[in-house]
Length: 53
Image (cartoon, rainbow, N blue to C red; front, top):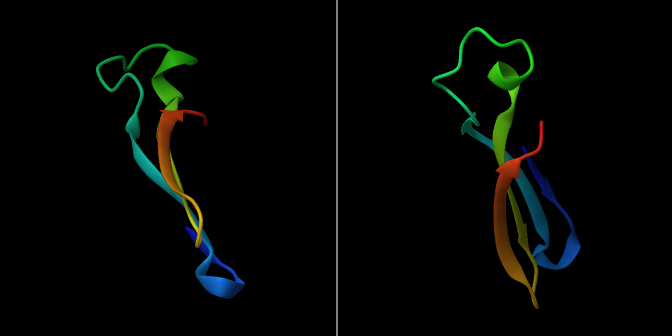
């Protein structure tokens, strides 16, 4: 999902993978997603990846 704003600003949210893809039988740990959050603007460009959903 990409959100574009004025002046070439954008924020991108992307699913990378499950945090623990090898765990398939635990209701809580089996469903965490690794997400990439990328921000782009004139002054700042950065990416962070973490288990957020």
